[in-house]
Length: 505
Image (cartoon, rainbow, N blue to C red; front, side, top):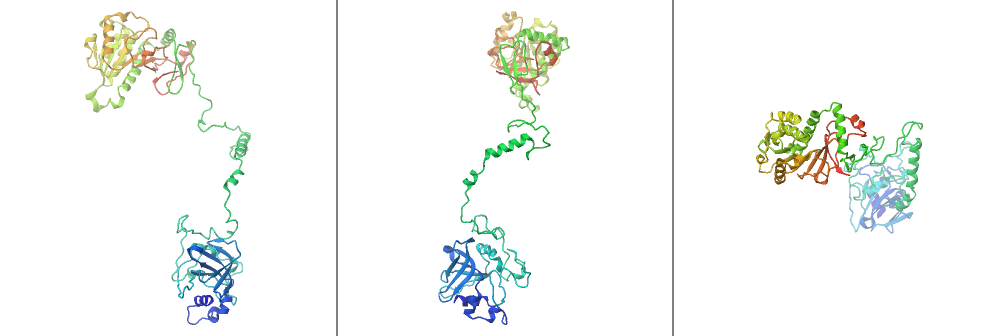
């Protein structure tokens, strides 16, 4: 019955035909004609799909045997497999070899095996496993009339070989892992070796000596003959840098760039880690004296100090978040307490710059100090602004101001600390509950009547006490050669700024 079924399916559809299957339809002869042909047998989901070369067809027992079989695209470990017609759900002829010079049928003609007394014909393309087996047995793929060395190209169908109900199969119709689909261009020839053995990843990885390979690479780079080296071996190779190093650096950073002849009692450091030592007040005076001899006069220092102090004060007041043209109804108020000395003149210079930046400024200055030259010139400029000036603490605002700048203290003379005007100004500052910025305060040991939150030092810091708050340093324009002349090895710690914060080292 199986051979007669093969004969039925392979007969030509023409009424008059002279091909071998049509001329000889004897079941015995047809069984012999199928030997050596390539077929695909679908045995259902349990047994799967088999492909192979027909080795025998037994009509009495209704069995067919395949030699060199493939199961679901993988070569079987046995040389031959026999199937019963009861187990076969679908049979497709992949290629046929006729011993009597017959024609070669189409490689994807579907053949349905009769089961339980009825036949089913399914005209559809081969499954992915069946398409894979087209590369099997290339010796049978020679077509009569073509050169002997001609070999049919896998997965290439001409329009003339397609039936009316066939379409071009699409590659990758199912994504990876879906349906077990294979592409015969990838899984074609030479796929029968070692497919049943899992790859030993751990054993293969153990063969790789990572330390030795990296040591060899490093040695090649040092010798200049490695694959990664550049230039000739005679050229000097660059240094080996870590991943967190800047390759543009030619030498390590020296954080102690300022060295003083007599280190002070304290040391500070900037945000970038540069060490800034403190100096004594005597060395500070000598530094300013040499700078004045070279042209950095008191007026220049007052102007520079006023600019830096006002810039820091504007930042403390809120900067661009507070001082905008749309916020004129909430202008900040700053009170400056100035004494009869250079520190008082520095405060007046700062007040002028703050007034120029639309800040409400109030200066406290006793009447008897107006005759000093430095203070008189600064007051003359300040009066040209819209800032206020008072000589009594009772005239200061009763409500809290935004910021108090303390310029009452002096480095040398402390006799004014016992004066009534000084005590009333200190009492007002301590009761106003506003933050205090101390401008160039004296060194530790002399006391600070007004507790400050911030302190601004000039040039190099003095050994200040703990009650001065957070210390900042401003650049007053002293050249490097002036520092060198007084015995200080100096490199500017300011970078792109004129005011930098200092931290206790």
